[in-house]
Image (cartoon, rainbow, N blue to C red; front, side, top):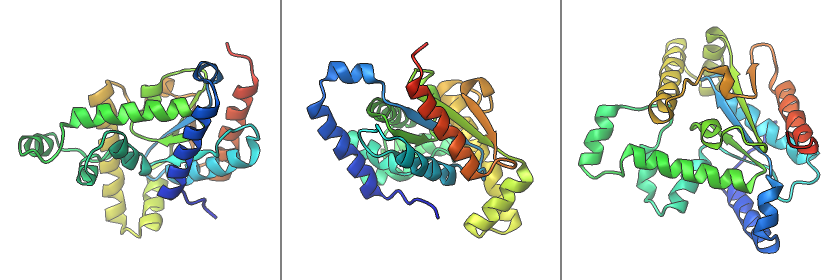
Amino acid sequence: MQLKIPTEVCRSYIDCQAKRAESVAWARREKETPPVVTISRQAGAGGVTLAQKVVQYLREHDLHAPCPWTMFDKQLVQKVLEDHQLSENVAKFMPEDKYSEVQDTIEELLGLHPSHWTLVEKTSETILRLSHMGNVILVGRGANVIIGFVPNATHVRLVGSLEKRIKFCQEYYSFSPQQAAEYVKQTDLGRSHYLKRHFNKDINDPSLYHMVINTDVVTSDEAAAIIGQLVLGRQQAPPA
């Protein structure tokens, strides 16, 4: 059974971190470097499903977490809107996996939303805030590049064969084979474009991640345990 992460859970996470900030000296908290996990994924590789299982694994095994582990996927957009006092209408202009440069320019000229670069900058600021809070899993939006290889971060990339990813999307979204194939193609292109345009990085570069997992041959339960054990092990190991 998948662990659901509704908006209320994300709000609870933020409230918990706020109370923690009141009770812990900031100087001490800076040294704690609480752990954070980022997940980059090919379309249909089961990124959200895996993130939910990693949350569940770490909630059960990370006995020292000051606040419950929480995932931010679509909820990240809502957090950006709250952090920067943006209208709810802006949310629809913040996709990671679909992007038209011409359409974005027209929308900016019409004043429908802030520039795409501004939205990416604000998203990056929120990702950094969440990473400093720790005990959080961030899905997509170049979080691994934004945070970088700091001691508390673990970056994961999920890949799989085109055939199996199309089949996954057929079942998950109730798509036809043609719809699923087009969805996978366009989503992969959109995510690749997002990282290249805004961070000048190749999303398929394995050196951007601590590990790359092939979901064709590693189940989501196995992957969650692998990631969870790595996160816990790195907390116990002395810093390099």
